Image (cartoon, rainbow, N blue to C red; front, side, top):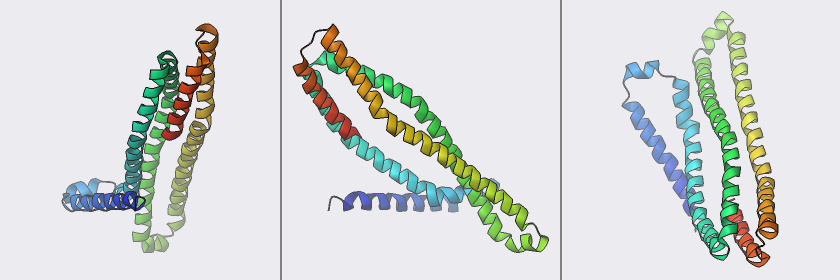
Length: 212
């Protein structure tokens, strides 16, 4: 039963947003609709709404995990606040570095959305003008435009995939390096006992696994 609730919620969200989008489209003035990119509108209603629903589901899940993370981090601060503070500072530095890469991924994702909308428009025009294109011998020329747009979308997907793989593959090694540096600082410079450090580290590890 608990598994079916997120699925039902997501499907209801998609249905509600699509219905609202269609209602808004019916209320749009013809002059404005004629000037809009119809492929982009089609792409938003068919594809982008599902992405928005998945993003909202991820945000809700992240909020649930955030509560557990705050509890574990609170325990870590209670046991050894110096160690916990250093780990949080190192984590902020890592997130600052990854934030720049994430912003690049976000920019490419916007370009991908625009490219997908353009492709939807080209496909719609191709089907509606198929007889004319065949009669005038322009089908091959129009097909080259479709192929170029498909290649562009593929390149954007490759860039997003490459950056996503880099983010997921390098985050854990970077976190381990930060933890090793903090533990060395605690043990050899501040001469702190390793007992509380290891227990605090266990709480941080648990928080990290839950956040993933």
